[in-house]
Amino acid sequence: MIARQEATVSDSGRLREALTALAFIAPSLVVFWAFSFYPFQQLILRGLYRNNASGTNLRWVGWEQYGDVLAGNEFRDGLWHSMQFVLFTVPAGLVLGTVLAVAANRRLRGIKVFQTIFSSTIATSTAVASVVFLVLINQQIGVYQGGVPGFGSQAILENPSTAMFGVSLSAIWQNLGLSFVIVLAGLQAIPQEVEEAATLDGYGPVRRFFRITLPMISPVLLFLVVVLVIFALQAFAPIELLTSGGPARSTETLVYKIFERQTPDLLGEGAVLSVGLFGVTFLVTLGQFLLLERRVHYGS
Amino acid sequence: MSRGRALAWYLLLTTLSVLVLAPIYFLLVRAISDPTKAFTSSVLTPQGVRFDGFSQAWERGNLGGALVRSLVVTVGITTLQVTTSVLAAYAFAFLRFPFKRVLFAVFMATLLLPLEVTLLPNLHTMRDLGWFDSYQGLIMPFAAAAFGTFLIRQGFLGIPSEIRDAARLEGWSHLQFLVRFAVPLTRPVIASFSVISFMGAFNQYLWPRAIITDAESWATVQIALRGLTSRIEQSNVPVAGAVIAAVPIVIVLILFQRQIVRGLTAGAVKG
Image 1: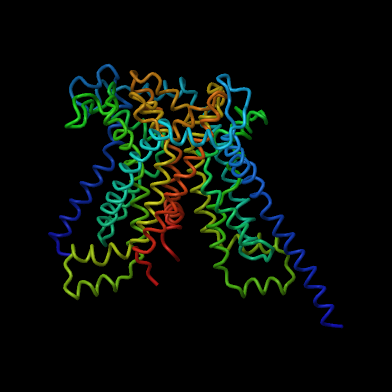
Image 2 (image 1 turned 90 degrees about the horizontal axis):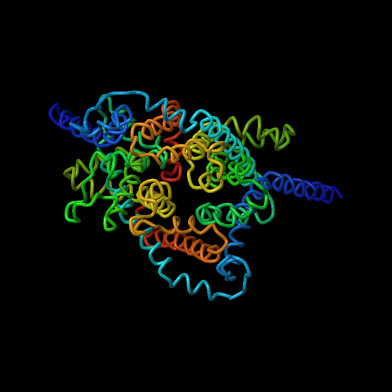
């Protein structure tokens, strides 16, 4: 009798708890449904329909449009430009972030000042960082108006072969603060004894760095790679503000191409490009974890 | 460290500082340089010093109005994100309910669906709702945050179970426990997320750029800055505009450096 009563109480308690939980997650769920999942579903469906030149008369064509767009020039060029952005910004972010963090991870008087300076670019928005690089390398007002040595005398942003590199520079600089802060946190999490033991074992600073420090911070570096790759794939402001996709469309990344396809006549193609961007982001993120997870060292 | 090595290390640190700060130095020099004289002799020092770039940027870019709008949008997004994240994080940390793991995965899946991917259909939604050039349009798509839910949940999980048991024995409701204990006990985590959320919202570019059609009366600071760059030959004006646009976040960075660093590194280092 008593046992049964208890069970009833706890059953209604369970229900109340579940209802409370539902009330607590409902606000987020509504937002996620309205602005993430529903639009994603719309995106996939829209790609199944072709439109005529004026953007009307939607016709169901199955996966045909996906095949055409994903195998076509626009997607390939956009993907290549996005990948260039990744290749310029991610390794640079890793190396520079590590250099700054190793330099600032010392017990020296006034080290806090240097740490603040190294993290200072966190305060810049992508738009502000873009204006900074207009001042540095724009052909009209830049401090430096020349080209990249070996690529002719055209200004960096005016030369189709170097414009993507120029745009990447602003992202590299803007990411310095974030990269530094993340790697420094990794270095500071290394137990003092580990470094001391390595020194006692007769490891020099260089060997200690490559044999001890680098493996110990590899999870942090992996995290940084993921963050930087996602930033790079999503970059938009520096491209619009520094080159507007030019010259000769050489800096039109996937996001830039998607942004340009807001008119009804281009929506079908834009939807497929968006699904393509999702696929690339998904694969890159997944691939990084699968490939690198095994090779990085996770401390216990 | 020996004196000599310490000195060498300071030299290295100073060199790196100069490299990191050089772009900002050139920005400031250009903001106060006469655009017609900027290149005549040296780019290292201001030429024909004038400060009217700031007032011109302020007026031409309508930066006063843009700052107010940016602050409304930013405070709106931050408040909503923190509220929805705290509530959801509480459910995921403390409550038992069906499909909990699946729902948590659903939350995290939104990280793979940023606005860059869902831009076009979201613009369609905005058109249907009539939310172009509106605060709701600028704010509502960012009213929830998977990252915030994750971060705050981690914080909640760190609360000792004795405290929860005690509260349960006292007959506290979940809302009471949330407000009187859970939130105060995880204040550092919530503060970190709030500051990160604030900075992200203030610095947004793509979404405001897409849904503001009437820049004259709706531009946020970042979008107003874009407007200023259209007359780049008067370089001191857009450049001074960039300096003004950076000021609010520089202030936030100075005030909340610790919280920002903790928030940015939360995913990177365990514990």
